[in-house]
Image (cartoon, rainbow, N blue to C red):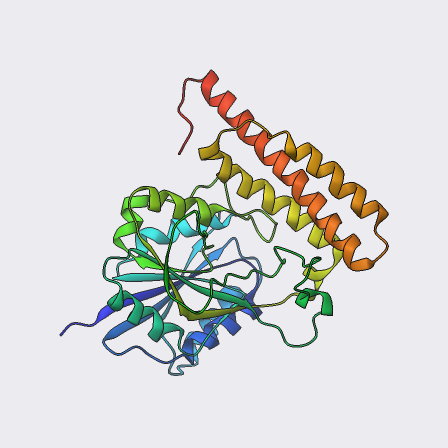
Length: 324
């Protein structure tokens, strides 16, 4: 019987140290029986020693997963993804970020899920912060002044498998895997979305998943498929929290209003004024941090609506239908 095939796809930009950490977690993960697993890395406009370290890793000859890589000179994760998609000739493809550490059961649980849910086209697992105790205490606050979303990505829908719809949750691409047929059905990732280098843009993955679901793809959440996201302590400083909340909300709001319309709800202005007032009058650090981040998110939401309205107007002026 011919083995089924899985390709693990990693897009990377100038993070060779973290990339090798990710590859190590894959190479030490348990191998799924009846499956052949390869790793494909896309070096996106890399100017560090990524390619040299990949070559050295392969030359070491250790018993790791088969490793290949290609280069995409145009900066931007969507460009890197689109460069890789035509290279995917397998039954499944799994997307892994270059700052993730995969659980030892990651590969086996992916392949088991593909067998257990034959009617699902898309799958996702859990992404948990890779806490090591050096993080500040406030990141673990669960009460009124919990910071959300944290600048360390997290996706956790609990311990029970379930079918996901956009009304429940939309996962990011960091722990997404899918049947390759859906690549051709859904098409490329939007190059208007997604990060360039290590900036704070995003939502290219959310947009792609929504398009796949609109075409009929069923999305299965598999909690046993776990990855741990690297914790950069610099991202836990207030300035980064504020910028991330703003940028993230701009992009996610743009996706939301795609189906809801581009009129700016009046309550957003009231929410912005309230959050700013609470931030300026807060007496505790936790309360001030919380409302500053919520203020930034509210500004991002307003920006997202305005951007979408400008896009729709420009397309209408050219008699072009906006993408759905």
